[in-house]
Amino acid sequence: MNARSNARQRPSRRCSLSPDRWGKLLAAAVETLQATYVSPPRLALVLGSGFGGVLSEVQAEAGLPYTAIPGFAPVRVAGHPGKLVLGRLAGTPVCVLAGRAHFYEGHDLATVTFPIRVLARWGVKEILLTNAAGGINRHLRPGDFMLFTDHINFMGANPLRGATSGHDVPFVDLSAVYDAGLSARLRAAARAARLRLRYGVYLAVSGPSYETPAEIRAFARLGADAVGMSTVPEAIVARHCGLRVAGLSCITNLAAGRARRPISHAEVLAVAAQTRERAARLLTEFARRPPDTNPG
Image (spheres, helix red, strand yellow):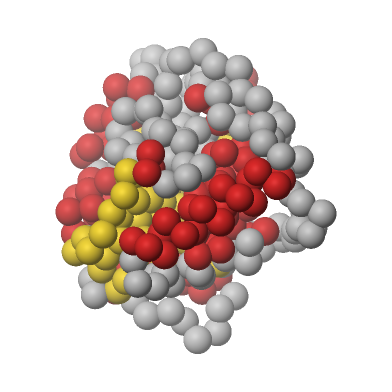
């Protein structure tokens, strides 16, 4: 449910460019960041719907629209600014990706996840992926924050398929995608911000249509607590690149069959706007905490 849209697209499931072409774009994008900022921050934040308020807390030192970075896709979804901001959050150097491209917009997954590869090649070590999601678990309510404990990829595609070179082994272990140390820092940040943090399994679908009640019942039986249309491909690629990963959803609506009215993107954006201040507090407290010495 991250930045849900009613547009009808037919996304390609294959990488549209050759590995050699992607390699050249990757090198050009990294050079662009190197020319923009002195050194890579350790921490990157990817801001989905509901989390844009943290930008006002960032002491920005440099920034680029995605259109100025080779290989970055333009962002056309409401609520996603489409820019990269470099600076400090609570005194900590950060790289903020304000918005993301989505599979349902017609992009292939190599394009959707390209910014993650760029950050990893540049030297970022940790990444927090955020989004808006629909609540499947009956304990989740709109406005809640849910920390990922795991995910289910129901998108029908994998970002490592066809997007790797002969030097890039695609068989990455996903038995512990979401880093225990980063998750502990998020829990501590929630306590410091006096915010309730829920925990659960995030399930990703391709979109752009919302799910049916029957699908939601099936997802619940599979063990999913929330559903959305992003993040999982980024998490897979981040782990493939050796990054430490955490995932965080803002629950913006009840999933199909749980709600008494039709789900709409307007509702998602309205709830996301209501949570901006709390989300900013949570992410600021997260950035304030030093990296743990024993990453897990």
